[in-house]
Amino acid sequence: MSRGFCLLFLLLLAPAISAPQRYGRPYTLAENPQYFLQIQIQNQSRYFRLSDLRRMQRTPVTLTDPVTNTSHVYEGVALERLISAKAFALEGERIEIQYGSHQTITISGMDLDSQTKPMVIDTVDGKQLSGNAPYFVVIKLRGKPSKTIADVQCITIKSS
Image 1 (tube, helix red, strand yellow):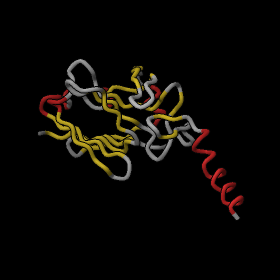
Image 2 (image 1 turned 135 degrees about the horizontal axis):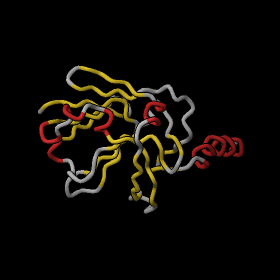
Image 3 (image 1 turned 90 degrees about the vertical axis):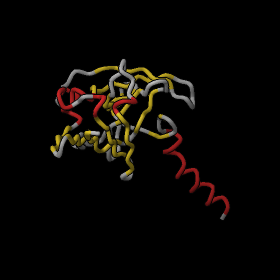
Image 4 (image 1 turned 90 degrees about the horizontal axis):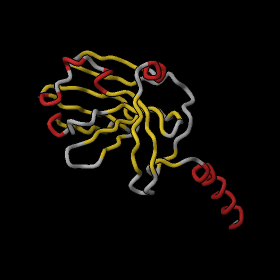
């Protein structure tokens, strides 16, 4: 009985061990490119597929994983490209990011680093992200290291 339990445990653990890691979470190639990213601005919604992001001007960003101290190359689109520039006044807006299982983080435009633009990331080290929401958001806050938010489903821009 003990031998069977060990074999079952190893079979269940094998996929997690063999998958590449990113901040302790496995990621694989996106299986279905039909997942949408929703962006809301003043009660208007825009939807983007992975294929839409792939056609836009892409920017690579290199960040170091604080756990493993290894560098990863993220690639994606600047948030301001996904929304109209006049609606994106950093000082007067709040950015609400819905991620994971309906968790939300709110970031004030005043806290953003003026030198670094928020990015919507869909590729890490040349591999597309997968899952129900295959998008990350990378945001640099003033005086703090870059913040990476995984499994982003919706980004809402609100006036303060």
